[in-house]
Image (cartoon, rainbow, N blue to C red; front, side, top):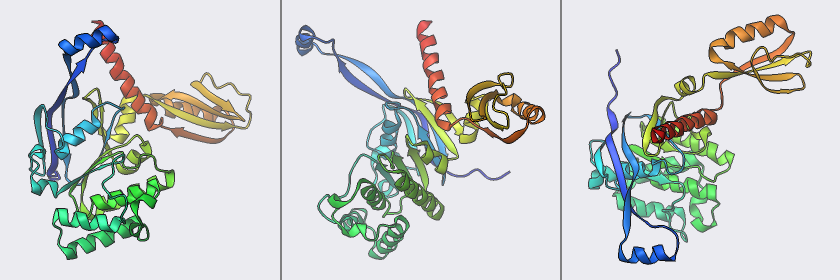
Length: 337
């Protein structure tokens, strides 16, 4: 048996509870809240646990408000947990130790760290001073990242003149100059066009391969997740719904596949072979139980003149939606009881 990989990240029963004020609408309620304010506790993260081995890229998925960013902020040391334990590279993030801060980075797609009116190269120099990177090491890291991201011309322009995609690439470059071992990426491709998303995904994969970095990635773009992650953690309402392989996710939560068949005679009725999803110009899509896919395909090939036949798993977005739908239903059933 292969030896288990060392863990870069260990999270045990992590919880973050916020105390938020509440009141009813209306003037009377406003006046009452001046005299006696009421509060309620909200669990943004409700006791999650997971381990991430060194060098793994893991997708951290969930709807808005699921607790993803709160978890990343606790992992990076920006928020103090209400309870539970975090260990990253042997450090407790909330202690904000210099050794830990120098070995990790947090990239948030909707936040800026570069100075707006100066070239990115000058901001890179500031980061060199902050992280106390030796000059020779800094030049090697800077040149490597600039080459991988293809931003040699861009880093000499004032940041305010860059497009969103260009600025995002410069932001990522600035975050990796100190060669972090752990990357927390919160929507790193948000708002970017398809071409720019692909370039950033390629860069992150290359960085992971070259330096063995551990990556925890949140993204609403499933193309990011499918391109980079073999494992995903799905969170909703502060709790983990699924932690496992991306391929196994479809098997567990979607018992159907789509059989696409092109027939020479478009008038044939295929309703007896599965649920007809669409039929146009002789090409019919059928929803079929996975356990019956092979048999249905064999029957179609035997019964008709077939010019083309393909079998597809459902889109990952649809599978994840089913995971969330199951979570909502369980919550409703629990409240009903």
